[in-house]
Image (cartoon, rainbow, N blue to C red; front, side, top):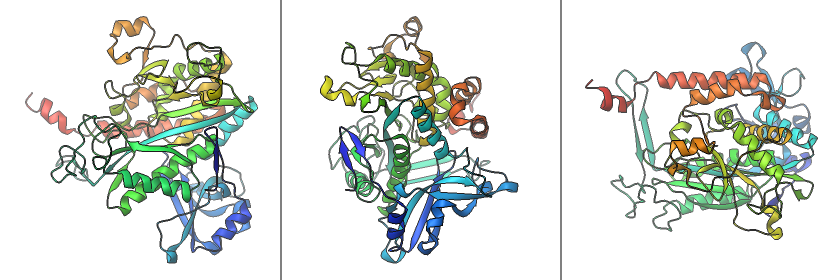
Length: 485
């Protein structure tokens, strides 16, 4: 494989412009990929002969920014794409006559006006620079959860007639033509084949990620929910490669599922009554070769004081962070008690009911490089570049202001009474997208050095628009509850 792993960190694949042009000369097409502010993957494809050395210097002039959500107005729509040589990969599922490489791109303004500052990858680069200016580098290890169904259908095109959806899954207990070994609700964690019907799909996705896309994976497995929930974890890497990895996982899993006659979704809560999909994010800060979160003299979790301040920043801003890390109305059907979702703003070691967890699989100085925090509110509907960048803003605010995270909570927080939670100072994450956006509107200063006001305002606008659109549509459960009033 074109990378190595040492002490749980990726020593990355490297490629320069000359390497990419050489690979491009042996394929038919070049797929230029980027994400909009919601994190959705976009692309434009050029013949391989159209990729030249100048493509990397002055950009590929192939983007109408006015057609991309949150990019530019129609009167200034010309934008360019700058391919990143480090992201070159041969897409494995196309036949030889359609052989294609992909390149993830940065986005620039037309007319030689420089980078587009609201582009998610540009925001992530500013986060990396912000850390570097403060003497840190960072490592990230996202856990990406998803569902794979046999078929999904929905009817929203005739709202006056009604709304409906249907999920077909060979694993689900409601399936008529199942695998013969249905997975019970909340019974999907680690069952072996044949009950785990998606082992081959996940393995194929991981093989493509490692062999073609140069992304080192840590593990894959079935997740807790019935109906085909899975998870793929990656080995920790720097901020931008880790965000690239999340985008690539979604791209690969969706295509592998399609090619196997199924459909994958990263929507947080597609299945009622069972666990939803999260994207727990592990992060650590380093000064050179020293893990700044590790302190072997700490008796609780071998966590340094700086690590505690980092947690303090995440908890201080958790409610406003929610608008970025859980940015859909579906996100708040996940963030409810009882489904392993981190509803409560607390921290602990080995406690998955807290918003911030300190993993303690191993202890001692030999494992000091493993010390990290896990931020559990994010879900896979979020834009990973913006999730990681926002976490940087909160963590650095905690460190600069020396925010005390309070005492760790080592009890199952779901079982505490409201009075007990209040006594311990445990806050609650927003219960709706509207509530999260309200929090972001009143608490965004810590993000401004990285995000800028323009992008924050765009996010607020689009999320409020989504919230309003969905709140106006009658829900089937409303008929059950209120039809006879």
